[in-house]
Image (cartoon, rainbow, N blue to C red; front, side, top):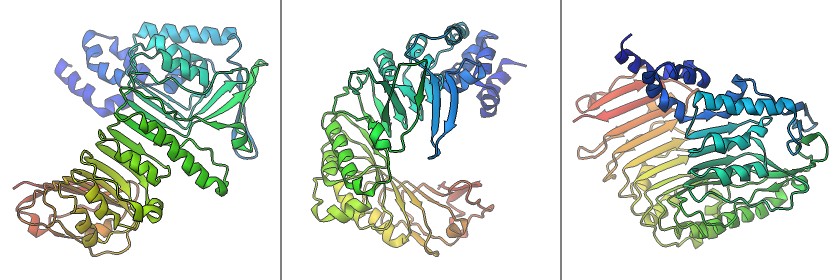
Length: 460
């Protein structure tokens, strides 16, 4: 087969999905052309869990049980003791095989890797140019995490979400983490810290029936990270189903984020997920003059409590906003005043009152891209009237009902800048039938059909 054909085959997603990471690495050693062509695939991601399972490295797991609260209880070989012969041989083989294959990657994913954490400390020496590290839903020792971050000298992107971090009882050092100064993107939240005893040959890692008694939050301390431009923050709470503590938790999480933002004014993109919002936090966000992209959770409760006090000065630099307003859309008019240069808006809502909603959104006079998620369709027979939009180029409506789309009527002014309209379905809910272009659009618009998406492109 000619080189040209191989070049096309290597680009096919089916080709990359068919082979495992290890098989693609082995294939790349066949010749220089294969190696060059497959480098981008190899470099993209290194799935740590998949790799160690494929190569049958030794596990630290001794036993696993489930308690009365349906929580997993792990009994593991004590990592604070010298490694036994089996783990030592496995560790040496891990280093040797990675070195022999010449494997290197820009990004490593550590996901559900609960019983191979004795290999984590080898990552800095094997992946010296690592730029992105994802640690999610793991059990990991706090000192191992600190070692990784202290020794990954090129790290720019870190995700640390939903982890249980453990430290041994004799560790008198604090829980603070030294973030790499090279870090540009940080995604953090829902991390808790527990304690283990290092006395025996094994350690038991299990959740407590009273979680707040045995676990503490991993705090995001107010430390300046000089190159940080993107932050995703989710509160690191551990829910014990005690509603009496909700207000205290909300204030704690807001204050933690406020303190961090106050020493990191270089933030350009800020994502706040599943966390409380209060007036002090909103005012802090408005003080970030470099901020260009903002994503907020549902802010209905905030609006109810603080609407009458909301008078922050306009933020002229913000270009992109994503938020959810389930019912109260009155706030959109205020936001249009607050963010006069907004170009991209993604809005989630429970109901669509088209004319009322579009009229409010059109107050964003420089808006170019509008994406609307309708989570609950209340009525049908809507008209999409874009006459008030001066600069809108793209509109996408996402819902779960194809019958809802079939009842929509359009009203497009001849001078509109609108070039693209999309109707999308939440996947696995429904599928569009093969549509026909309505008569009033045939002359100037082209329809592109997929089962979950209808795209209308203006061609004249």
